[in-house]
Length: 467
Ligand code: PFF
Image 1 (cartoon, rainbow, N blue to C red):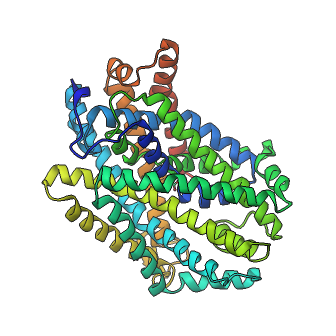
Image 2 (cartoon, helix red, strand yellow):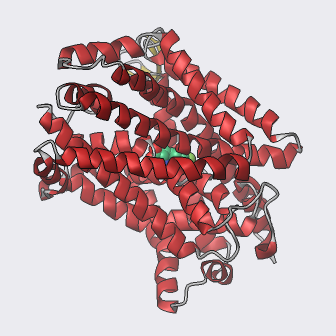
């Protein structure tokens, strides 16, 4: 029976380690950088509500599907899907979905590492007091100076990629498990320190109202963005959660575990919002700044309030740790697959893949400076161009990879995984893996996986592409 297999890469000591690992993957720049700024841009409470609905109805069923496929297959996502498909008499081509997800994860890592690198630069800048008393204009110029300097970006990008490769190369237990046991509690402590601090700013309720006051007329504005973000923030659709599921002990309850991860991820996003917006308001700044919220607005805010230098440094360390525990989960599916496929050492494969991601990441580094005029996907009056130098519209390298992954690869991957669990694996196999006591609960969850989640993804996917 498929369920008796053991992963050749190792196993987590308990389901708690899976929770640490999956939460580490889920909690990242998505929670601390993207979620607050998107909430700012899409008008606060209405966006938060759509986000919660998408997490519950679509994100969680997909996460459950990935975890159970991984745990039952006990191999890298590609090989788990292949062997489970064959066991169920279906086409082994289902594994292509995992292959696509794996490439998606590597592409995300390529730019994630660059952005995470910015936080390394800010740890140093904040620590040195470079932002003390800074004006918004100077903070903007300082951020512009960073992203306009390819050498500085390359330095941090390289360092971050080395940190990621280092953990992965040491293996599932000695690398991942060991570092997650330290980094995750640290992450929670840092976040709580920051939250406590935001209480003292005198603007806590202002931040609270901004996040939770519900304005019905704004609901539709952010629904597409909320769905895309639900995928990104839960790390679903690329096989990261699946590979972590394959290291999960056989006895652990998948339902309770996955629910815990989803709740923790959501709590961190909300706590980050609750911690940051009061600081933004205390510094007299606007919440709707977009991606610059974390690198321009917040430094100004930190630079102009009491203890801002220390707290700002704490904040950017938090960002770095969160990004680190996410980035390792992007590399793991491909490393596990290539180790299985080639039998070569984990260190060698990790080095090659990290180098590859680093190289692609250089495209993102240059897209902010020397290649800012290189545009892809250009729709111009004279027709469509895949690439054009200096075009008016189009996307630069970084935006193109971001678009390709979060708007196309993640939804397609998530859809394939949930369809596989819902329609191919078979009711008995799913029931056995989930091992719910209540038949009603099982039927509800199974229905979410078979019908609600796939329709949700499809609707948003099509709406997004035709926008
Ligand atoms: N969930 C991460 C975040 O919110 O930052 C991003 C992410 C991690 C996406 C791992 C995809 C992935 F495989």
